[in-house]
Image 1 (tube, rainbow, N blue to C red):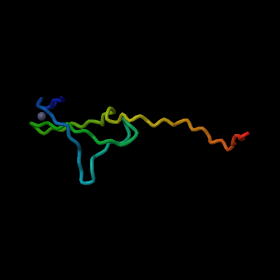
Image 2: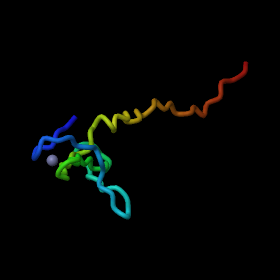
Image 3: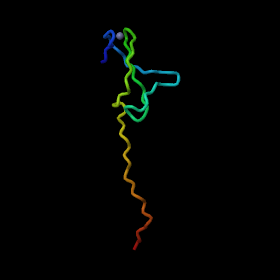
Image 4: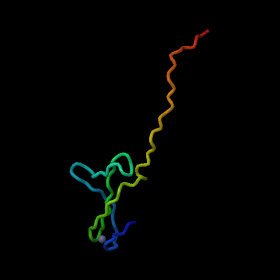
Length: 78
Ligand SMILES: [Zn+2]
């Protein structure tokens, strides 16, 4: 729980929404732009902005699989 730094009331997690979608923060903590997290005080309306949490973007990079070249040589049957 994050309390408001102004009045010490509860804050709610929200997001910055525009008509075009969420406001993204580009490539500081992760490679892809992620939505900015807004903590909005329920009492005074103060808003704190947080960078996207890296935990929410915990998808591992797909490791390049070992690709063995397809051998054009066909083993003789006999
Ligand atoms: Zn407040």
